[in-house]
Amino acid sequence: MGSWRDMDIEELEKQYSPSCWSHRMEKDVVIDAHVKTLTEGTQKARSVTQTLLNVAYGGRDGEKLDIYLPADMTTTFPVLIYIHGGYWQFLSKEESGFLAPPLVSKGVAVVAVDYDTAPKGDIDIMVDQVRRSVIFIIQQYSQISGIYLCGHSAGAHLVAMTLSTDWTKYEVTPDIKGAFLVSGIYDLLPIVKTYINGPLKMTDEDALRNSPIQHVDKVRHWSEKCEIIIVVGEHDPPEFHRQSEEYFEGLKNAGLCIHYEDVPDTDHFNVIEQLTEGDYLLTQASVLLRNEYLQAKSG
Image (cartoon, rainbow, N blue to C red; front, side, top):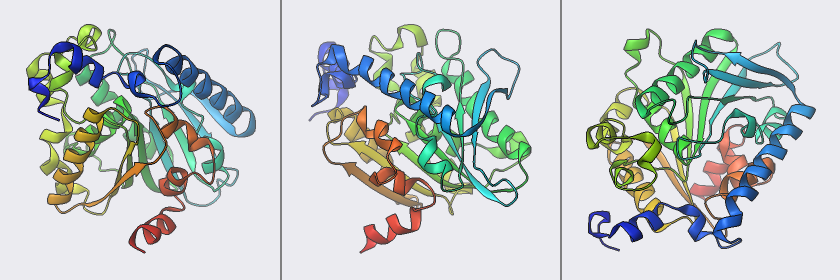
């Protein structure tokens, strides 16, 4: 496949429309089914775990998060912070707790973060909000043994931008031990040309400033001990594969601890939905079973 710059607008927009590539459902059905699955999973998670809902981490309307707590809070515990997708313009924490039960049962706290989606928030605002949500969490719990970040689609972009943070501006450096980037976008320039940019109103300058592929060196400066797993679904669009591979290569060449996973028989949606399942490969890779995952990869 040639460069995205050589595509006409129809092809470019298809490449950045994951619903067109699902192997399971028609494009008009798969997004609704995705939202339904995440919503029901989140409702179930709230019914079976101890939760703190609608916790404010800042003063803006969208600056809220939900915390799913393990039963034993008397000892140290890891925290997984989940950043939702939705092309920076829909979904919320109300659909983002679905992955909590198998992790909480292993002693992991899960945090689902909201941010001001477009048109209320722009890309710069969203990136700053996610960074501040991480700081908020580490300031709330002194017994955290490590932070793990997980983002899907646009959420993977926001996690990648969080990895490129100059933490000196925030007067604290979080102990981020792992990052889990699922079906993400790491170069925003192609988005500027598409219908997706309607609510976002990004300029080329905005896109470059907020493209993780432009900030690989910033990741290297502080997160050499952070293990990063870049994930793509077999039936993600080709452009998502290209972007994931290029970001992977950039981080690998920078000397970071980086792994790549192309998950068979998944599309852009069920590659994240299956995190409700304790024996799903990516659930095992996310936090506590990380060592087993890495041993399996090396073996």
